[in-house]
Image (cartoon, rainbow, N blue to C red; front, top):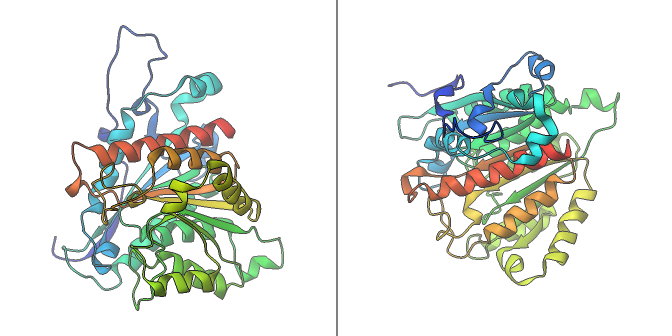
Length: 351
């Protein structure tokens, strides 16, 4: 392909395969057996699709941010890894006849950049991705983004914003829900830059909210003091970012950390949950765009995600920065699939 383009590719259902167990009972179900193409135009509501997966096959933002490119290859691998996981008994018991229509695949936004810097291509990809996310959320489904570079975060937020119809025109007619962002990440991702990158999305969100006279509520969990400059910590303080460091996650008691997270959740009406997989140690997740030497424990992330999902305030979630080029035996994708399953299971069980 010679031109730099952005396209929305329909769901590739051939990715949804797994074990066949003809001698087991019907309860030997796997997620691949439940997935269908996402039904747009209100059909999702009619057939009961409660989850919509949207891929962001783009790492132009990582390239601009001088990171290790390759994350654009991860959405299909995340799907195929998750597809092979079993559907837990609680969900089978809870939904019974609804099972075949719970999960929809809304396809991928592909960012074809010819392995080079491409002017405005990331911005186009973010907007197209945001539009698909908007369609999913407006159907009362939980939208879950599969990345791709963490530049997807601005698109995830924008899709949520559009779905909520938060604008000056709507302000006079209805109270505005307050959006809170919870990001598991070694990096604050609030860099100053003249272009969007994988290191700028939350600064872009802050500026967007400021332009619309809305507060910026951002909690970043797993922040590394050696992965962020003093300038970034200064900006975090100026923006009122709640920072929970990787050292906090290791040394503080769970009860105190949980109270911090719950306090943040209480301040907002809606949560956008995002997990940059580089919050985990490189020894656990080697296949990421920017590997962490220290990181936070997987058990902590899983426990915190369950706590956040229990609030029933999460309307948008995504998993970013898996880079298959640097993975080992699919380890990184397996960890991401575990967290994806946790988000989906908790959403369904509290809905």
